[in-house]
Image (tube, rainbow, N blue to C red; front, side, top):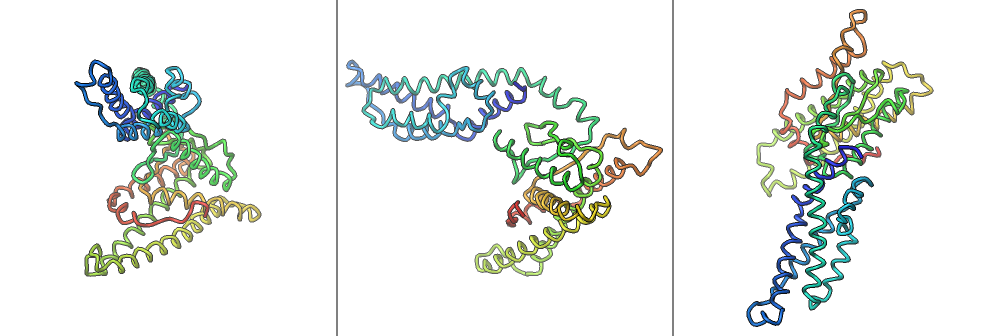
Length: 374
């Protein structure tokens, strides 16, 4: 099993507890059931009062369903199975627990026993996996910062703001999505799909690194540069358009004007995105001297990938690339591919510093991009 899988499983557990509190809700229900069990004993019937627990029951059952093990790998599920925790997680486990409670006049001791089993199994699994994760973290950091991040050209997809990684399933989906994007660029440039491969994830899987072969370095650098320019220029256009009106568009009385401006902005950007992706793709293919018989398909593949890159940037995500310094110190060929790519990538980075990213995101947040299939 990969070290990263165990650490990701630990993060998965912690995120579920942070957002849905399954263990806390199971424990709360369990304490009430134990109290009621004591209250119903013959010796205590006149001393203790039975507590209602409908809300606590419903909250615990809903929380258990949030443990969707379909988000996990087979290795991770096997780790849960070592503590029998997988049998108390997900939709099926939630339904089974619900069946136990259909008639609340059931024996309280029986109900408490069922909830206790679920709580103990999940808690033990979480504690054990977190402990292992903590032990593995130094090795994980050593591996993720190994030499491939220092001496290998890479393209980095940074997930944040509107394109955050929420789960392991989400990470897998994003990885496939970006593999497809890079595959489109590769097909257009006659680069084997195997030349774009996932190197790993960093910073809690918020950054996904893809290896780039030499043939892709300059085109990718060019795409980064041009797509960011499009996003920034459009954001500035929106700001200027809004400044034409000497009024507070947030006021309800101006709601119709605000809607018209947003509709116009959306239409403009979708047109701009389509035209720009065509232009960028065409310029890359011109420079690469792609033969006429291959050009139509290459054009479509590049346009599709560029549109998706624009979507990522618009939604607050970020991109970066890295070219090892030793690849740029070619005195025999000062205009090498790596050196040209480094210049483009540095321009891309400097442009990101010229504007307030928060302001750009705020300006663009209302825009709904066309579907990725375009």
